[in-house]
Amino acid sequence: MKPLHIILSVVGGAIAGAAIGLLLAPEKGEDTRNQIVRFLKDKGISLKKNQMEELADEIAEELKK
Image 1 (cartoon, rainbow, N blue to C red):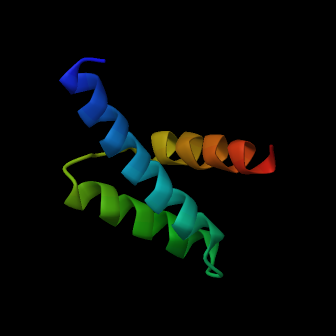
Image 2: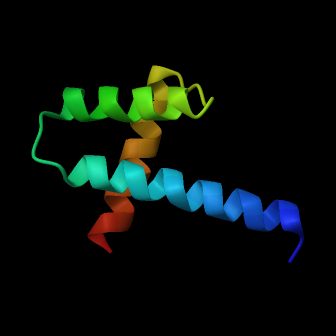
């Protein structure tokens, strides 16, 4: 595996783990989404509202499996 793939895998896993943790937290959905957006912005990742909603939907679907 190339070093870039390893780095991207680790970063992607960290982001997914943080997002899942926030989604499972007992808070209102809007508060949770705002926390995820702030976390991603701190990491230099900017998402538009529709992208955030798509990410949340994808994570929710994965959690149902």
